[in-house]
Picture (tube, helix red, strand yellow):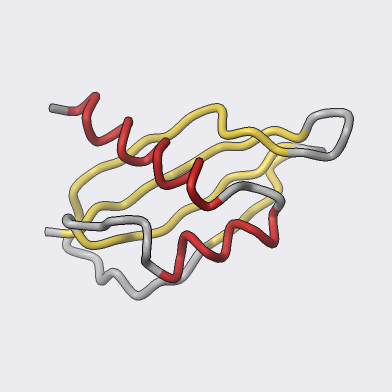
Length: 87
């Protein structure tokens, strides 16, 4: 089973972005490495993607967060924290 994530991030006045919420659910959708990014309001972004259940942060989708001024390691850790909160 794969895991679908929805992440919301907000921009600070200096232009940096911070993850403010992470939701996840098991899914039968394929983990293809695609990152869907939508600006939902000025400075507010929503990101959606699917990773394998045993993701470790090396997946290509995490590397794509850099272009949105989000640290890929911080996003990976936020996802891990969300998974642990589900347990």
